[in-house]
Image 1 (cartoon, one colour):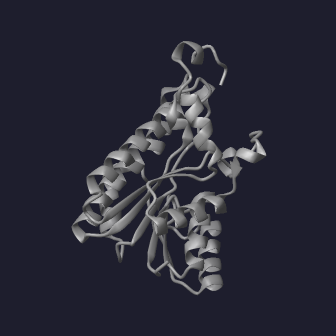
Image 2 (cartoon, one colour):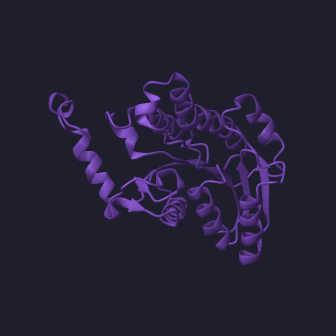
Length: 250
C-alpha cells in the first residue's frame, strides 16, 4: 500500500490504537483524535504516541475531539494541519441494554455515540474529501445493526442507522473519488467487551480488525465482515420470519 496519512477518530479505543499501529507499520503518518486528549495528561495515549513513533519511525500527533460535541466538529477538522488520506472512525459505546431501556440519558448517550456523532463528523469529512477529489472513509459499525434483538436493540438500532448512513454516503460519493467502507467486526475482545463470555470462534482481536481495514482499503471493498462466519450468521438471522423471531431469546 502506498504510504500516506491516517486519522483515527476514537484514537484511545483498542480498535483505534490497533489501526494506528498497523498503518504506522506500513509507513503512514498518524493522527489520533480522542476526548480529553488536549491537556497532555493522558499518559496511556501519549505512551502509545511515543511507542508508535519509536517503533515505526513515523510522526504521530494527538488532537482533542469529542464526537458528542457536534458544534466543535468543524472547528476540529479546520484545525488539523493536514487532511488525512484515510479516516477511520472507531467511536462507539456498547452500553448496557437493561439499564439503557430504563434510562433516557443512557439511551441518548448510546445512540449519539454510535450514530449521531460518527455520522455528523463523516458528513463534514465527506464534503472535504469530495472537494479534494480523493480519500477513504472507514466506519466501524456492527452486526448488531442488521436486525433488532431484545438483548441489545438500543445499541443495535444506532448501529443500524450508522450502517445505512455509510451505505448512502458510499452511493453518493462513488463517482467522486471517495471510497466509503463499512466494517462489521462481530465480537471483539476489547475493554468495551471485558467481562463478557464471548465465543472464541466468533471473536476477533483488535489487530484482526486493523488488518481487515487495511485489506479493504487496498482492495476497494465496500462492506467487510472481519470474521466471514458472521456474514452467514447474519444472513440466517435476517431471514428468520418475524413471527418466529419474536419468540426467540437472542
